[in-house]
Image (cartoon, rainbow over all chains, first blue to last red; front, side, top):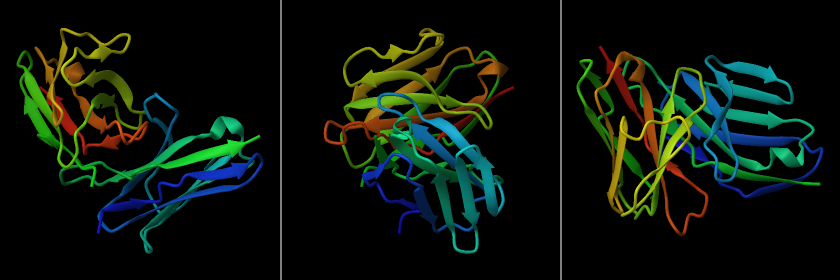
Length: 112
Length: 116
């Protein structure tokens, strides 16, 4: 079992739809959770950074962490064509090797 | 499949010394490798892109003589931080892609560098 599982998609939705992106993980030691957005031929940019369980909202984006289920989500409301990109989850814990583990990424296309 | 490893995972060195970080694709041939740098809670910043057998392409603002990149084979790329200084302390991450993976990059676990 991989440490972090993420459905690679591709995911195609109409403009204005609510998008749900998810990752599951197996290592309960993970403490910090991130979502990156990567446009074609660009480096990933950090979208959301969360530490604890619960929700964190930033504009149209909501990150959700459920440590009991080892499940994290990123919701995009009112999706726009400019949201079309690959979204990667990543996580790590301190106190050990601080190994950063990425999901494989989900490719999202928002159709106008 | 598509596993990328980095070595070492953590390194502490004295100011003025050079540090080499290795990035390996374990089960595939990486035609292109990328080196990123990340400060705490910041985005990954692309430093350079390298194709096997050719010179790396550096992003604007990245010193070529400071960060030496070698992509000698389809499974190995190295980043050498020369004459390291405390401001070089950061998290360095590599990724790799193949002809078949298209734009998908497979990320390594990162190397934390601390320069004293």
